[in-house]
Each structure stands twice: as structure tokens, then as C-alpha cells.
Length: 184
Image 1 (spheres, rainbow, N blue to C red):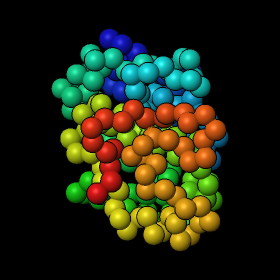
Image 2 (cartoon, rainbow, N blue to C red):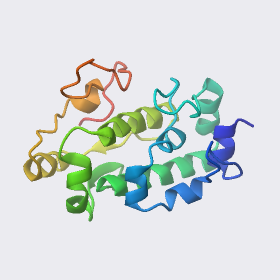
Image 3 (cartoon, rainbow, N blue to C red):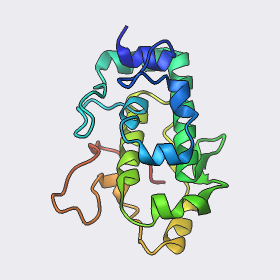
């Protein structure tokens, strides 16, 4: 079985010998400081520019996630954990809304373009590729919280285009398909 699937089945580790449950138990400080886990939690078909040991999502991996409820359940757990880290939460109907810790996370996540924004594009693309039943919808209630509480004018189009605002090189972070990742 591929290493990614072993990791998500909780019988194998990532390239740093960490189990999924251990990564999901990390506190926010570790999630902010460690940068080589996100590619394991949310794989995509392209090789990571920052973590050459990260898995590259294959068609077979995607099919396995689509057909295996345990893989999907663990993917949901990963998504819920990263949402808490971002100061957001998922409602039972799949809507992403402001979480209880939103105010705590403003400075690290939402105040200015940073690596967490890049993580978000990866996460959303990975969720789609791995067949999470319902793509999360970012509630319109979150945007005023983000833009009013920070000096950044967090662009709604960021997750739609995958382009980092102010990018010197116009790097493309998430491939755009014929549909948006999540704007309602």
C-alpha cells in the first residue's frame, strides 16, 4: 500500500516518522512553526516546491479516498483540525464559519498574506481531489470578520485564483478548474 494511504490508515508514518494522530494533536504553535506536514495532510498531484519528501497524489490514491470511508473520515479530521488552527470551524451542513478562537488567530493567519494562505489553497484543492462529499463553503459571514479585524483587505478572489496578492512572480498555488474552490 502506498505510504500516503498507510499514513491516512494510521498504520504508517510520514517522512519524519510522525503518525497522523500525532500531527492532529499538535497545538497551534507547532502547526504554525512546522512546514512539512501540510503536504501529508492535504496531498495534491504536483510535487511540493518546499518538501521534496512529500507524497504526490496519484489517481489511485484519489480513488482509494473516494472508496474508503476510513480515509475520508481521517481527511475530515485533518480538515477540522486545520480549521481550528485557522480560527474557523465547520458547521454540520459543511459551511466554514468563524470559530471560537478566531480573534486569537487573526495576527498569525489573517493579518497579511502569508504561508497560511498558501496552505488554504492546497487544502481546498486536496479536499476536492480526494472526494470529500461536500466542498466546504466559506460563509459570507467570515469575510467581514477577516477584513474588519485586520489591516489587510483579504481578497475574496484569492482562493478562486490561487494567486498570492502582491506576488512578484505571479506564482500559481492552486490549479483553477472550471469551478471555484469555495465561494458562495
